[in-house]
Length: 376
Length: 255
Image (cartoon, rainbow over all chains, first blue to last red; front, side):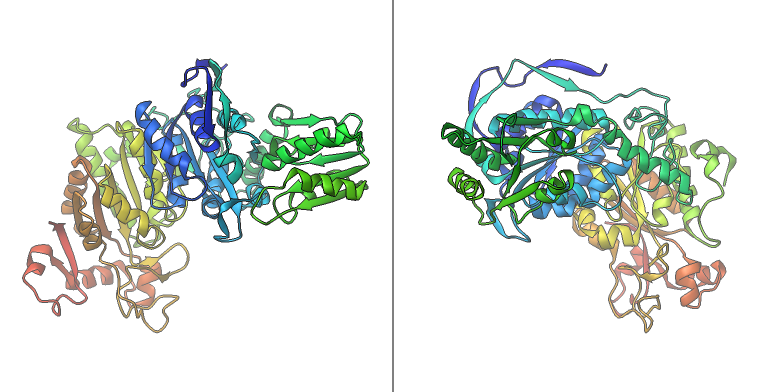
């Protein structure tokens, strides 16, 4: 198995760090040795930290001329056999989407961190938002499946960045870490464990790198494999076959199937008091923190509220959500309603309400509590 | 194509997709001849080369023809992808081959920044002054007054002189040749492949199908006659006035 256990880069102890720094450290712990990026608030600290730390661990850093260049350089580095990451926020993420599409088609493992802010356009550059959920899922062109993770604490910024690399390497898919400004700039305790589980890509030579099996091996450049890598429709050896309907169909179906068939291993979520709840909150990222607090307070008053927190926003934990017995569902998010559409699709017939906030500030616990008391 | 160069090619991809009269086949051979010269003298290992290209006819020169590691990327982004490869793998020789639209229009920003950084890249521009694959639209190197699908009344914009542009960013090696100057072109590619920093070669390549058809150059012979008329060496051009150089193609090494 290419899975191995490695000593953590940082000495195992408690740290007091901001989320963005924890994300950068998580990437380094996961084996990331290439970072290309372009400054954008509120993600820049990740790049600044990487600029310094990558030198120390023998990696490569470059500040590119734009976000398109950044993701392109990351894909180039990934095919050179190095784990690569870039970080950005909404406007930069939009620019990267074509590159994400290329990474999907060529099955290139990369990690893209999106520290979300309020948009559209420049919007509120220094304020938190959660408006890029659907952009992460459907932003690139064509038909595909993707993995997006949503951290709710500094600890998870570290842990989920490591997980993002592992999932990305295992399934040969770009993985998106969907944080938000609060999580990025929030400082709290981070516990670094002595060991990290690391997954390295399967490099088996002589096998077709784009088919033959669900997740084919991925050799690197310079290993004598004469790799043909193209974003055009290609057969299992990478040869362009743009006039072959069955080749496109086979390729596209496999790109989707490798995520669909492994949903069980990819999906992560957390529940809190959901076994007996009347009202179930669905929230992720910093919004889930407020919701968690609200559940705690309301439970003390005897109100049966629960919380369902998807950690993998994509693929969404559908089956697990269906098991929750709640009468009413309240989806809390820092946008005008995006994830609620997905929840309505999964739970037809249930009463589904939304608490949306686009003021550029986090949803406060009392706002959640007030809303629950209204709908009780 | 010379038999001894077949070892560098994926023969299963032949016949080539290039139109009759296209200069890209000659450029393909020139690149391989330069590589062959360097590999037989032990200065280069073909298995340690990575060819990166964007989108368009020029981008099809290495991908899928070359039996080496090739990265056929998004439109305009070839140099950015190559940046990632050459930074992480200094042991590999990274060569970008793409067209004028790809490198100078959509990819213009990456071109000047890679030149400014003096990255160890070789960039070869297969310059046919038109968008060939998308049906003959104006490109940033289309000469003034020329007819294209999107300039039906003649191109009103001034073209880029890519060599002067890249040279102004202090790239290591810059030169321009046409595919009719094969011997000096091969020499230039050899020089580019052996230089340390950023090397750029602008190769004027005829496109009879898209450019020629619209501008009264109906065959490769007509093209050759036209290029013979307008081409001028860099040394000669130095002592000529700006007015005399209008419409000329300056070939040679830029210092």
